[in-house]
Amino acid sequence: MNDVVQPTWTAQALCALIDGRLVGDGSVSVTGIGRIESAAPGEITFVASEKYLKFLASTKATCVIISEGLIGDDIPQQTAIIVPDAYRSFVRIMQEFFPPHRLEPGLRHATATIHETADVDPTAAVGPGCVIGERCVVGPGTQLIANVVLYADCTVGRKSVLHGNVTLYAGTTLGDHCIVHAGSVLGADGFGFLEQPDGSFDKIPQVGTVCVGDSVEIGANCTIDRAAVGQTILEDGVKLDNLVHIAHGVVVGKNTAIAAQAGISGSTRLGERNRIAGQVGIVGHITTADNVIVEAQSGVSKAITTPGAYFGSPAKEHRTALRLEAALRHLPQLMVELRELQRRIDELTSDNAAPTS
Image (cartoon, rainbow, N blue to C red; front, side):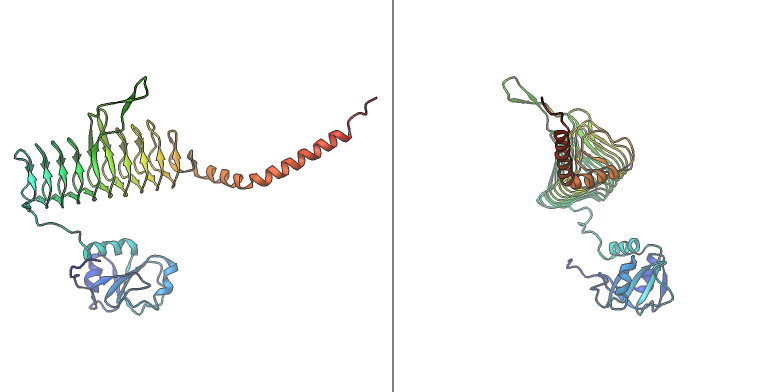
């Protein structure tokens, strides 16, 4: 956990922060957060599901946030804050107790290299080992934590954070309020090769760019390839888990979330508010509708034109996929029964055959 000293709040102040209803002593001090099963005195926890109500009697937490409708006439022994959605309110308090690490605004570390043609806002922070290339633009309040490399002509918007060892290849654009976690690479060449008659490959120049919208979060060790021509685009609000690959020319629609180890092949366009689960593979040159869910380890081999949940390889509508899975489980027994029926038919056919003269 963090070594920083945690702030101290009163329950009353936290109640005001999340616009809740206080039950009990509002003057108690809260210095940390914890799970309801293991919270210590001085910590705040939450109950957002009936299955966790049983821990109210035993938790040592000083204060508990409880969703409306879960608490009846029984008053908890702890100070309680009643809210519409306890989990959402708990997250808000977590943000207050654990603000993200930030460099001092305006920092220019002695080991950083900033090209004379780069335009770095006075309030942006440039940490140790960073390299900012020709004609780059870094917006107000943005943080380059350490060893960040911006090739020539990159643009990073306002109040974005690039963590250690992030690399933006030439011409990459990153919007406002973005977070890029350690080791991710934006704008490397797409996988483009032309096979020759002798079986060797010639490289196809990848001369496009990567454009990332606002409020996008990119996990650790993701790779987002530049387009061969044109742009690879992540629209506003996109969230990528760790180890996600976005190939050249892909467009990811607004507020789409992609879990770890998923791969999106070249020139595919994902709709808005898609949810792509872990280890999903999507072929190139197809589209998905808005509001599509693709469940874990599925393979999408053709366009998805209707919103809904899809599963399997090749991916099918969720209920159809489950029926097929159920049928497959019965297939071995059905084969046994089929062979037995065939044997009986053969016997009957043999018994009824006309005798030869």
